[in-house]
Length: 154
Length: 154
DNA sequence: CCTAAAGTGTAGCCTCGACTACATTTCCGG
DNA sequence: CCGGAAATGTAGTCGAGGCTACACTTTAGG
Image 1 (cartoon, rainbow over the protein chains, first blue to last red):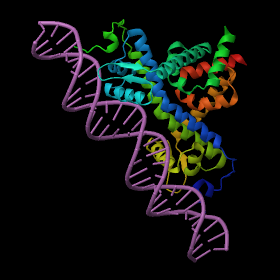
Image 2 (image 1 turned 60 degrees about the vertical axis):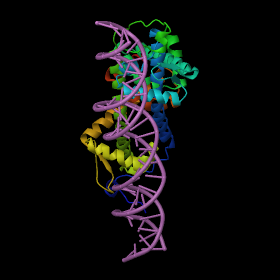
Image 3 (image 1 turned 135 degrees about the horizontal axis):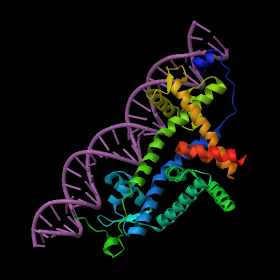
Image 4 (image 1 turned 90 degrees about the horizontal axis):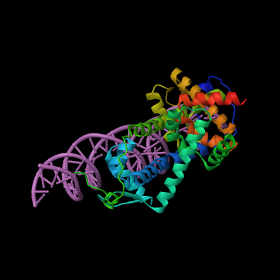
């Protein structure tokens, strides 16, 4: 039936491990998180630009994220498709209710992650850098734990 | 020259923020980390399969990661291109020296991340789940901080 | 007021990572 | 010893997220 691999033919153990659908699910979730990560970053950045500068222009967004303006515009189109932002040609980008909510949640989460990293002794610059990647993979349960931990520290 | 956006025309602040190439770099790094994440997962899993079962077959890898076997095979091809693994048709997958090294590093990092999450009070299941996504974004500096923190705790 | 520069948008191309569908190889069991 | 099931490999497609190149608006400033 199934071909044996070289290793198996060499006479190695070939112990039968009990199924791991769990691990598959974990990887799947991590992959999914990845797909929403970009939208979260955009929402957060747009909210920030609107708050501090009053306007969110594709070029500014592109510069802040380090991508070309064309890429930014395409992603903004995706934000619109997902109902997170509105934008009319040559008139800047704005967030919908849903977009604002997401941005607020993402911002709070970012701060919490950075604070926790700092609390366990991670240097400031590394904390900021790593948080950028980490934040998108932190579940609510973990977030709550972070919050509790920080409260206990102080 | 530059068109003003709707918000700016509405008379909002438009404060001039001093450049942020820093943020762009951070996002860029986070994106790069993402591209190596998959290879790290594969290397770690292959090492695990070889250690516990003596063989690493594309189908097993696919099942453990929750993807189709075609996807697994394509990624294995990429591992070969990157010099991390070797594999001959119908003969199983093996790691090169570089692949083994990577796998060992990834495995140690994974454990450290999980341990730290547990140490700050994250429930076991959430820690395992989140670590799967987080681990790929943890820098060496952060890793060292984690290690120090855990040592101090005990 | 009218032009040119900056910003905006569009089109086309690339790679990755995932999929389905189909072809090929291996080797177990009758 | 050979037929078929399971594993393996190949081809083609898709969307996301990048890019460059080119076309079109807008508006500051002479």
